[in-house]
Amino acid sequence: MFNRLWFKILLIVSLGFSAYSFMLCAPFKTMDDQYSIVSNPLIHDTGHIEEIFTHGYFNDRSYYRPLVNLSFMVEYHIFGLDPFFYNLDNLLLHVLNAFLVWVLVGLITDDFNLGFWAGFLFVLHPIHVEAVSNISGRAILLSASFILFSFIFFLLYLRRERVGFLFVSMAAFILGLLCKESSAVLPGVILFYLWFKRRPVFILWPWALIIGFYVLLRHYLGITQIFAWRNSSEYILGFVTFLRSVITDVRLFFFPVNLHFDRSQRLFLSFSDGEFLMTVFVWIIVLVWLEMGRRHIKPIIWFCLAWISLELLPVSQIITTIGVAPGVISSADHFLYLVSVPVFIILIETTKTLWDFNRHKQWISPYVFKIALGAFFVFLFLMNIEQNIYASNEQAMMERSLQIQPNNARLQSSIGLIYASQGQIAKAQKYFIQALTSEPWNPRYRISLAKTLCDQGRYQDCLNLYNQIDNPGPF
Image 1: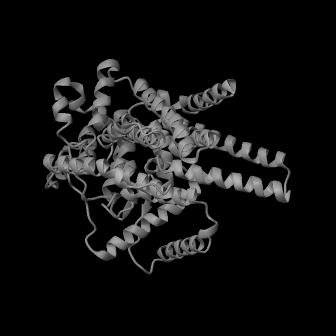
Image 2: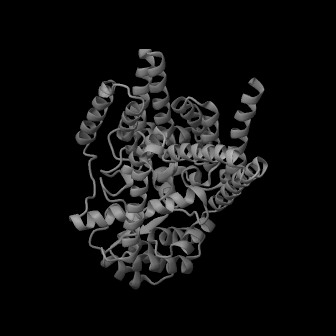
Image 3: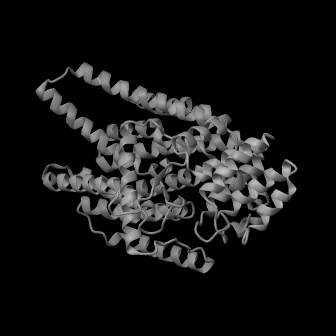
């Protein structure tokens, strides 16, 4: 038994490091990495610690993630601006999270063998590459660690009734909130778990107090900005667009091909849009099927479905709009990092049911069944390696992503910045023109294009572009 446990531990560690080792040599990316690390004065001087805890993550009024900036500050003062160590820390956090998933799922299901398979899928599945292989994904990884810790210690408290476990759980929850806003859904997940186990829910009152103080803190610091839809029609269209992206998410869990950085979804602009109508039809079928089969669905599956819904709530376009360009919402793969835990429980439970059913019916031999599962795991591993190879070369990663979504202005601008840093100004100019065409109101792209013209000696054209900027903002 002891040897088998160590084999499982080594398997998860070796899978994680062998698949993600390719991204360790990746540079800082031109998107969030440059802004949050390379050019972030807050992390370069320890005298800014107080400022880190009193300002928004991007010096804005929307995100409050001081512990993430603090982690970058520690790395900066130990390793300087060597991206290898920042990437390594992301990988270590991901492997740690896989073990936490193993323990958490084992406690939830009372089956630590099932927990192992959940941790195995968690470390292996390529849907996590975007969160792990981009250093700015630290907010997702770090918040996930604290939330998983919090949930685990809450379950230990329920089992052993030791108040110390409860305090550890609450402390980890607070730390999670200081890493990423979506951590606030944990009390809702616990609430559904208590209902699933038919346990009293009054124990959650400390979590309600923590969230209350967190909201008051954000209000005091002025970090409260959200972007609401202008009317109810846009609200509905935005939410159904999100539901369309979830259909793609489901496909990616089973068949993770065409994964790419900064994935987005075209916003539905009309109720008569054919894809809008088809999305509504698909979800009506899903809800009817769940209603018809509710008596045959295990309680653990219902709990996981509720968990998935709560984890997706912050990015559902209900609380705030999450867009990347006009007419486009974000549907990035990193949104699925913690969502994957209940998804993997459902996949494993379904596989167990199919195994038992096949053993009874003898449709295919158990040997063939195992071969098919092994082939699926190998497929996931190879796709993970492919994505990490792309992540190791930012230019290749961005260009591949732009091939899949050619109108993404953020990607166009990022490729332009890459070429500009290489001294290929004419190529950079082409991509900045594309970005400005996609978002003519964005001063960042106009300034970037003007700079390329200046670098080519076209000073009057450069000045003409600069003079068109009414409000450059922080750029």
